[in-house]
Image 1 (cartoon, one colour):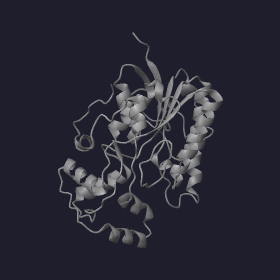
Image 2 (cartoon, one colour; image 1 turned 30 degrees about the vertical axis):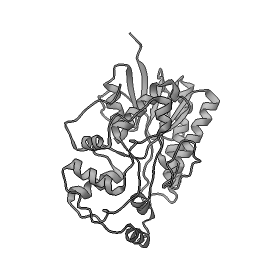
Image 3 (tube, rainbow, N blue to C red; image 1 turned 60 degrees about the vertical axis):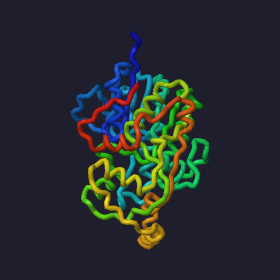
Image 4 (cartoon, rainbow, N blue to C red; image 1 turned 180 degrees about the horizontal axis):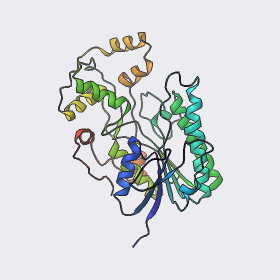
Length: 321
């Protein structure tokens, strides 16, 4: 019988991390452990409590005998007024914390380090689909910190030879997803009419199960070593079409009113909501040819199936091979 692969997961209590952990625990070829910030009761697998993630975090106990690290934990939000320069806080966790973990992982003999980054490293909008070879162009502090973390990881690879794999997903949707997807679901749930019935952009999304499948593929596939992969469902939709499909999956009317997008863009500009305008009206497409060609990876589920799983509490299908 083949020996199990020892895997350490960070961020295992978060939206993506919980799903990764669930699928790995259901797969007999992995021995999974987690590193958590807080010392509280956790009975799914062995847990190490490491405290806050920064340049001083001590990882040695958690890293002993691990072959793989999946680093999902990150600072994703800084509250307005919490700190004068949000980038400082993002860097403390996402850059310094990641670099510290990677250096200690390499020293402990970890063979591969899988890092969940963000498509924001490429940019916020585009006219041609992003690829892995594009020059980075982050526009927000969070994305800037993810780029800097990637750069530090390549330093670790050059210094130690530990394999690095970087995955850059766009908006991830799934059951109880936080952030922008959660806000869209809330609007549809409340039946609030939305003036988004005539938006003709193109945006890439990724279902949680598709992202987890790619993460597991990158853990095991030899061809993933020292590569960056962009992730998506491979089916780009307008904001209007995505909202319609969300409503259909929920069994709710979409209540979309066709207001010319230039009027909506003007309104958001007057209100100073540039980020909102980009998310609603701008295009952000992702080319996943590299993952398809190099790894033989295909998103295992469609957008419609991914959305159905968001609202079907009884669904618990595996996405691993």
